[in-house]
Length: 484
Image 1 (spheres, rainbow, N blue to C red):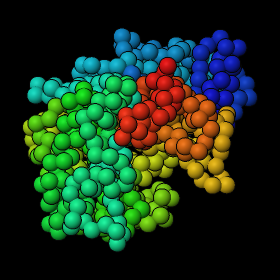
Image 2: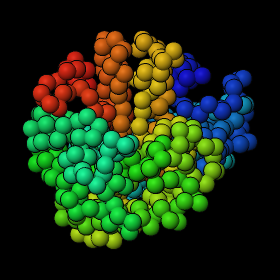
Image 3: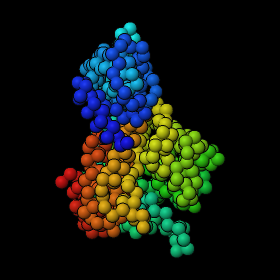
Image 4: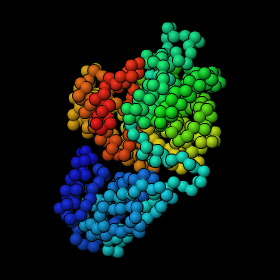
């Protein structure tokens, strides 16, 4: 059953019974009738598990809890200035839960707490509600990850550029300059005019995807000319007034030349190179302000073959490798000091994906300063609409498409809330240009609606503009993304 259908049905029941209730718990017992006698049980449930506390991130958010009680009950909060509950009383049922929405406002101060007390007859349950705060570090002048996400309008990926990794007999790396590499996959040399055109169109986050492997020697040292070129492009983005995200792009993925693998057998060797890479990047950009973010890597797989695109089952050691890489990334950046102590950092699920298993396996690295980590996921969903998948392609953006997108956003939002960090979509797009433009426009418009609904955003995967002529070739899609 779809989430919206569950919520709708419960709201209808609540309206009949005279109190507000809603749920995202699909395993709740079915309704059989009211219990008029005194309560013999009282439990507070979330995702089918009894709880005695709720912890929220800094951002405005909410969750649904279930109240398992066979007697009428009441609820109250010790502090209602920042936390609200949807209903303060409910009926008892033999084998059905009541439901309550717990909602918190954005917290721009210190960590705060309230207590939710639910009573039924002689039974009482207290739920400690905590919301994380900005902390007390006087040296932290960077906006938090939550505040930074609020400043993100819409983003654009400068793809197939600094991330290009040409291979084959036609390509002799020893004879190529940084700008040769930059043009290796058919894109022109990046100029301030290109970046300004993107910024002026309303995109205020530009993800500069970078592949480092071909520009590193055997000891892992990055070629100085390559680092200088990356810095030039980053400066273009910052000077245009945009946020900039740089990462390690095709150092991961399905390529025989990828070296950053989510595999515990590979991890000990690969992470030495990985930490050294991020130490060099962080030192180069140490004094840059809060508009520059670092992203650990892109779409990491357990193998560098196409087989890796299928996410392994829960508990596979690839997830442990990812968690360790993320911790190594945070530690390496923070150790360089300066503004890197507080720089906002981006972590990613396996393959950049958004399935339940890869989200569940995510963990937030330990950090010396709170609230400076974001999660980025990728969504080309529905895959057969957004991409050219031959006979499996979907040509019409229909209800099944919107249902799939709804499920993606609900999963990501819930997991980000559980982790206590904000999330955004580092890549998205209906990038199959052979599809009817009108259908792709519907997709763009719907994605904008979802971004607004969940107070997040995304970065379209390249295209849209001809970087040679600076002509917006898919202007109607851009208009839909911008809400025009």
